[in-house]
Length: 109
Image 1 (cartoon, helix red, strand yellow):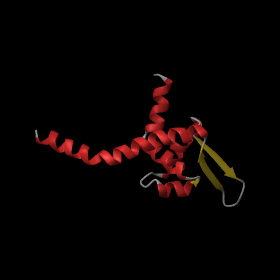
Image 2 (cartoon, helix red, strand yellow):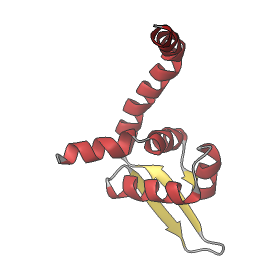
Image 3 (cartoon, helix red, strand yellow):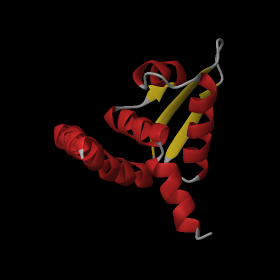
Image 4 (cartoon, rainbow, N blue to C red):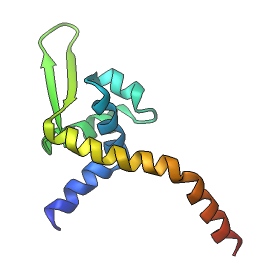
């Protein structure tokens, strides 16, 4: 499998897109991200953040305080990727009515 396909899968996954878009707005703590990305489980959020961090899109900063505090922000590579997936997500949102119409036409045939 081509390495670029794996990276594409990470960036364009359901949760990857939503996390990148959320982090493009500002730095977030884990709990803030979980609230911002509605529907994501704690386990899936942790896995996706770890994957995006490994790929160089997200920077994780753990602060040595009690209670523990971890902040996530985009790297320069992540900012670039977030811009791309954000544009696609906005296009999808704006064109969803057309897609729904096309589905209705298809389903009535």
